[in-house]
Image: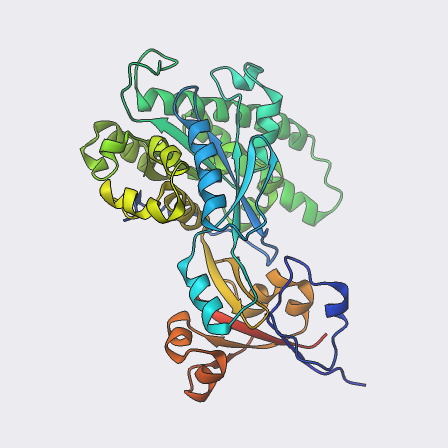
Length: 421
């Protein structure tokens, strides 16, 4: 007997409650940027399995403001969305909501009982000092932490302060960046060298495996050459197959990098007047990375203010947004991510997907059954939803579209999936 199609705007996190999965014949309801120069990444193969919480590792030399920034960003994130179940997994890990004003608008229009933002996990990675690749600092612990993140935020000191001693005696962004990048390069060179030696033994048992081994060997040799020239692995042009076969190594210099220029509050409104910031900007371009300007000092001060006073304080400094928003937007841009929404009486939720995903792949982020049994997606642009006032009104005005399997999801789409399980 044919199963009836279900429509759903889901209320659960990554997985639906088991009783919801039993549905067969009913309708389920859910319910001034300082980021400069987005890096155009090589084409990456992706599946619909996107983590509900992205992970960004914050690194930097001692006394550059790394931990101050981490603590402030996590605290500010908690305050900006008090209803979200934030947590500090460990003293150096915090999960915060992705700021998005559209969520509250949709939630209000839909009369949602609950609002769930997308989230990002920040990891304060300690132990990255000169010699870390050889076991200095926290050595292996540092390596294990940094290999797990989706992107790296490298905090670079761009302020003078005689009371805060720089580990190398003076403020020098290029030197700081070189020290950290060299440690990452040394780690990758060590790993690649060992892997190439294994590949040279040629243990492939069939022709397909041999093709993959040859592709991996060729890619690693080119990456190794780039690393020896002081260039990151991400600077090497690789085919889709080569990207796939080297992915398992989790190379540190392959990870997207954002340089976080940490300035004094007096430089936040006009960072272009700070010579250190301009130096970081040039280096980030050369290293095929992004960069963003923040003030850890300002972020820390924001944590001491009531939520309603924070915007006024930022405006007094000549900026419109906290560093949290800038950091997250930079990370999304660098990773090629975007947001779509589901919105209903029970819940309004933001979902993170890769730009370029089709409607079935986007549905699979909610649950794999949605992708497997995808029929179509009722879709309306965020602006049209707001203009209409509801899904029903959007349908009446002809703003709600029925999209099929080939539809590429756009930023801000509000979607309701029909699927057959």
